[in-house]
Image (cartoon, rainbow, N blue to C red; front, side, top):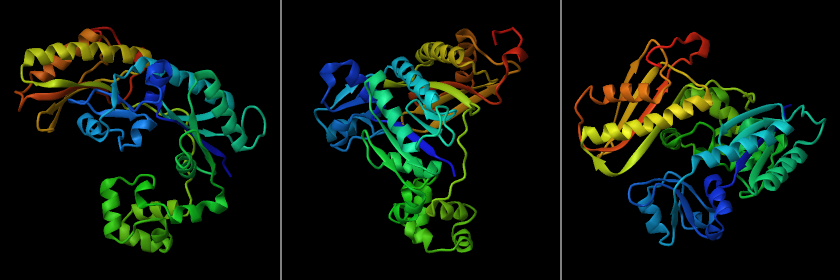
Length: 351
């Protein structure tokens, strides 16, 4: 039986800002683009008490919490802290699967420091993160990834929760269907329409009935409702894309202004590609209009573009490929497709 730990930093971006700016401590803050056109990326726990949540429009967040302080994100700082945290993970587990800058799964079935209870390892990681970064993390411990992630969310912030295998079905019986792995809003609506609102409703079916009523995914949800999840911790995932984008304070209709903004995005993307080592031949331009319609334009090259100049030139070509349908609210550029090894590339357009 596996021993899995899920570590999730508490309000990560906001916590870093409060750590680095003492004047923000104890205040409701939102990291994001501001209340005019921005979106909340992370809210401090002081702000969450007012109902402010990630992905919420800044204007709505400000109405919920008039005292809310908006803070511009500092991604390079967050990435550096994330590197510190991942180094700590590597001291305690040989199998580490990062999910984002601020969370990861660790398989501690055979830890590098000798046999120890998984809860002991989770506590040591939390203590080391606090000592080395000044930040808090919540940890979930169980026999698989689904249960460990569920546990980490049960006692936030700064929590440590264990779900034993024999406890799983009881815990899952009361779990709302929206909190099951892979269940988004559309799937949740379909499940609720079928009379399934919590884990107990799935547990009441046999696997064949779950599959008949819910299709191919029915068996998957039925197994989760019984705490069954055989996904391994995968240390290295192949990146499928890398992109950057910006939301403008005011909608832009002039192509020349958008081209100038694209130059800055291309510089940012080139820097991120250089740091990550990722290279891919397809370039995609993302355009979100005033009415929130999204248009994408892409081209695939014979060589992977790497320089800011190449990315900007390709992005401008895509921008001019067709007239704009309306003033533009957001512009983004990214690369994707099958990753290319560096020694497969030839010089040319610095492609």
